[in-house]
Length: 303
View 1 (tube, rainbow, N blue to C red):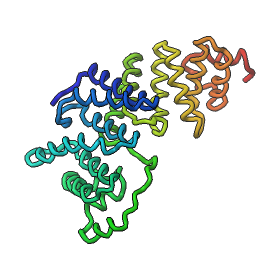
View 2 (view 1 turned 30 degrees about the vertical axis):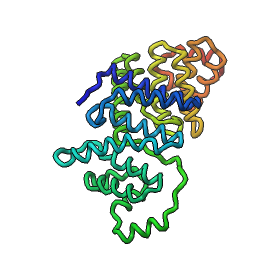
View 3 (view 1 turned 90 degrees about the vertical axis):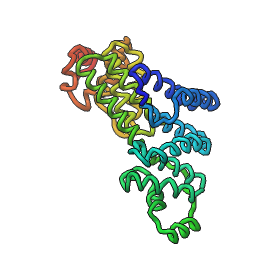
View 4 (view 1 turned 60 degrees about the horizontal axis):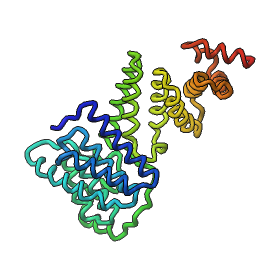
């Protein structure tokens, strides 16, 4: 097993994040070149590397986003070929790769090949591994031959939707990084906490504002950067969190931190605006950690 050190993991996620940045900037060719360079640095099989599954997920996400999903297929076929040999004598860890491979064939409307990989996934993981995927996938795996032939005759490809879910590996890794970030915050190791939250954020596929975790992670990252005295960086993250939460309902903690950040940056107008909004939502108790911001608010506004 190739185990990445924390420093190597950080460098890896920085590169993956740069792929997303380039893609969002309509620089798909540069993004693809970087992604394939990263892929080339991680030896096959990816099963034997601690970041291998994340890399494959990133390959899938990139080619899906750029409308070239067929280009992801060779990387998954290479991996599943190895896994099919491994499962004869050992337990396979990343069963979900079979579902992803099947899902690519499904998207390409090759349902016979999709069925092959969905059946393998069911054999290895039963129904549970299909929980976060399209209901068709489990049906295809379990359907009798006659029912499957009928399904193929009536199959109408669906338009892509926004109901994607993180893979189990992505969710577990993101949760782990957030827990480590929170632990570092408790110990007042704010720079270390920020690094963990950055890693957690890098796991979310683009567009990141489609994911519920974006609000929590950017708020946590902004909090860590603020606590570390990096106010400009904190402002950037807190504004992302604020925009995310405003779509539903303002988050008083984010409003508070934004107001405090603007205060530290010397922008009293915006500091007052956000601090007042926070006060109106939660009252004086929200300001217990540092009274100077409440004192500033009272000086400029009658509460």
